[in-house]
Length: 313
Image (cartoon, rainbow, N blue to C red):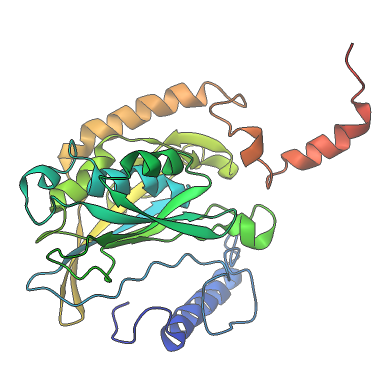
């Protein structure tokens, strides 16, 4: 939605919540599986945050031209955005503008959340790039929330240029109720990475957590809108990219940015990685490590076997 009421506005969040509720009622009448599983509360308290749905909001002053991409992932977690967002705004091998565009050359500021301890830290890049990588490489705990321009640059330093939904359902519900299916909004061009630089990180098909029962690692497949239907072992995880031009608050689009044969080789590589990972069955690294299985059915198995464990010689 586009509006002029700012982020975290109660009226806007109420509209979103009512849409979720009404769609859930229709889904229940149709006996659709998992209807309403992401709505973890019956009481709307003025803000969607903490109630289940992921939230990504940007507030900014429109430039002469305002391109923006809405990335939408399925079958994975917010940390799946760490690698691509890093590459967009901090990796000169991905974003040529960091080297040759004076408006980008100073770098960007990353807001990173510790989603376990509910803390955040701001890191300047390229100066603190190694510190940033030390955190966001642990994608199940440290997640890029926002990216800001550097002070004194072409864009206002207080206006985020990228934002990721960082809500994790299991933390809210206390048990596994489905994957988080994160989204991100990324602005581009004119002092920011070009559109091609924003899309380029997804040509890798990098490994992310989620997939079947939220318990497996697998490659992220960039796909068109009509092929965003993960069915093989409920996957592999997918990402779509909806391109918009923002003009006077209106969103012109969307353009289906991954509906491009240039990503066919990425998709083929993802399928080959899928075959390889699936061959591991219930073994790591296809299955997530024990510390990431805390909210699945695995703890119930361990509890049932608890009395049968005896000291080893």
